Amino acid sequence: MKITETLSVKITDIFIDNHVFPSRQRAAYIYCFDFCFDLFLYNLSLLILGIFFHHGWLALVYVFTMSPLKMLAGGMHASSRSICDIISYLTFCIGIIVTIYLPVPAIQTFPSFWVLLIAIIILAPVDTKSHRLTQKKKRRLKCLTAIYSIILLSLYLIFFNFFRFDSIQIMFFCVIVIWINQLLGRISKGGSQ
Image (tube, rainbow, N blue to C red; front, side, top):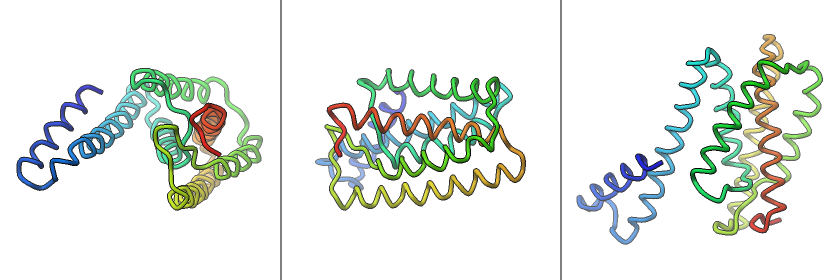
């Protein structure tokens, strides 16, 4: 977003002017600040949308499932930031709509949820043509993906125990989307094996 980019430039320049950051790494700091601000505002906007449409809990479960697992597992990237924004918001809206209007019995999703998490761990991480990962970084991301998948599986079981079937379905939707995104990343020219 333009706002986060402008804010990132201003904050980085303040730190450089005060000799906190070296000026030769200006672009890297701008990117890091922009990424953090953009991620924060995107997730906050999803929560606000969820609350506005009276589905704040589903939005929270979506953000908690999708954001960390997507960042760890990797996948295909959109060709531009605006296309990424459109796809991300559409995915969120489709996930909420599917969860509300097309409920699937939770007991039927469990085997698929488990298998998809294993598939995500196996495929993780999917890097891109512009950002290749070292073997050490790949092993670390795969390990973190496995740990986070165990956390999600535990949450799935907790939600099942407390009859939060809507939460289970939005988690299932997120896992399907992440797995498809990984496959597309692997199939595309940019994804490595």
